[in-house]
Image: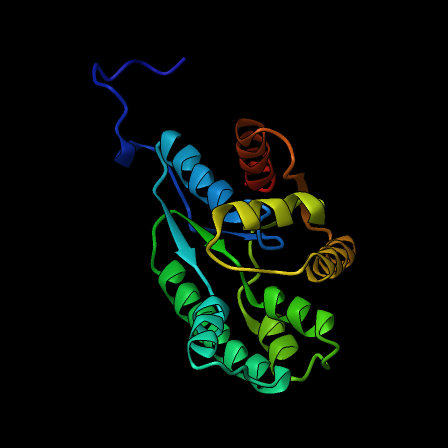
Length: 207
């Protein structure tokens, strides 16, 4: 046992390295709640952690469209969302590259690929190309939740709207990609405490 230094261990005494953890899932799955809890859990171990969100601006665009009583065609909506998502993801990776600790990303490029799949649009070239060239995350965690529960959560919070059929299709697409990529899958229907614990365990799996 090493001799005591006579002082308490501080945050700067704990060795750390840059790690990137990505959380994915359908709307209402609890991604943001799990991401926030994961950052808190990592910080509790004495390692610096930051939470970065990678939205596509879909909620904002829907509100603007509703205000003017119109809606963008799916193809154009997807193009705008893809640009916004990719820019946010690139900025997030740039920040992660200089952050001395763990970066937790809420959403990523894969979210846009799922949207395209559900909308019946082609994958295109940009998103797969970008996914193949971005730094590989240390762990990708899918917060999985039945569409019916996610839909009830969305209705209860009243901030946005999704159809049950869309959520079911998106969940199926996420699970299909997760199986092919070997992502960690967490049951989002458990208590927030259990989801947070299992998310932290999955994030630490490859540490």
